[in-house]
Image (cartoon, rainbow, N blue to C red):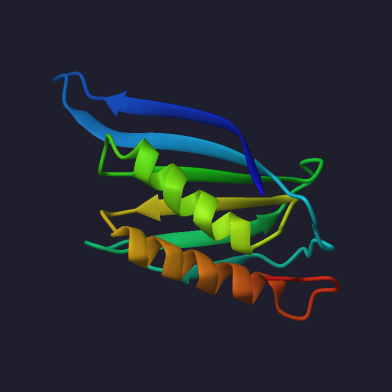
Length: 128
């Protein structure tokens, strides 16, 4: 997989306090498999954890990852973890939505592996 785009935004309250950071990463798949209409949800939004949803989308082979996180300033770490995960998972035409409540990189990788495994189960051409 190749990172093809990145956008980061902070949501700033009227008080000037940063509430959430929104990150958007696009990865171009070198291989992909048939998308399903079934969505997959793994994890929960709670302290030190995160929720991952994987949904089919017609994105021309792109895997889009949308993140909302309470921990701002970690875009570089998110990029490193996502690059590692999507080097293993050759998947396109999906949107991966992540709602994060301060999960560690190891928990992020675990939840992504769980969600992608559940999504790709029984799909033609699914590879890890």
